[in-house]
Length: 328
Image: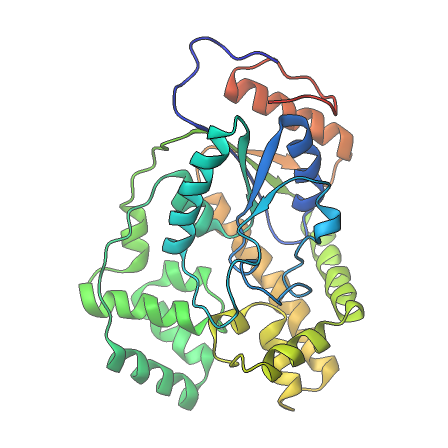
């Protein structure tokens, strides 16, 4: 392949996004091989060590020799944030580019991906520990949904994007408004939408019924692979149910079972429902993003790869055909 001599001097950045269970991992391996890319996980949960099954983390032996970054980088007690992701990702993009390889973000956490793609600036709004404790107490007394309703009354756009279980982010959104008088969604809307990179962003979508079927099958697979034992082990190690890592899909629901607040059948049913709702919120977030070229992952896999390579070739102004031995 060859690049246009008038190509941008900005570093290239390839991004593959889509809802959970749509098939990003399988697709990303073929793309990474073809383009000599290194993959950066754009998933807010795969950063945690020991949380493998519930996060659908790709195993080392499944990575086909392709470097994967921002996986297993901190313990589950660490409150990993979008700002930390952004900082680490910026460094990685520079390092990968300097090696002559293509930085390739793959994931479904919309805010994380956007923060890097468009270089969001996160203002320091401070903190109010007493306010946080007050909100936690409110949630304990009135329930997670009531806490989300409180945010919904102030910032409906942010409330729409958050799950009731995600108390840390709900409280942080409330705290930002409490401290600044400006909502989180207003802050995000005010961010510039120009990229510091030569950006190619591809989104995978799928027929909703088929996606939900794949989600249900994925949950069944996680249960068969030992999700209960994984969560039990984390709790035995001292990870607290209230830690941000334990608010992730699969961990919150199975923890409720282990705490005898739900039967196993109820926990699995809840997990499937919550995951379907999460996928719906992901798609809603992506619809508000710009610059995404969409591919229907319900279609033939090889046909989709050819379409993706055509998109990349057009964005990066290079000669690129669908073969498995190309180098970037």
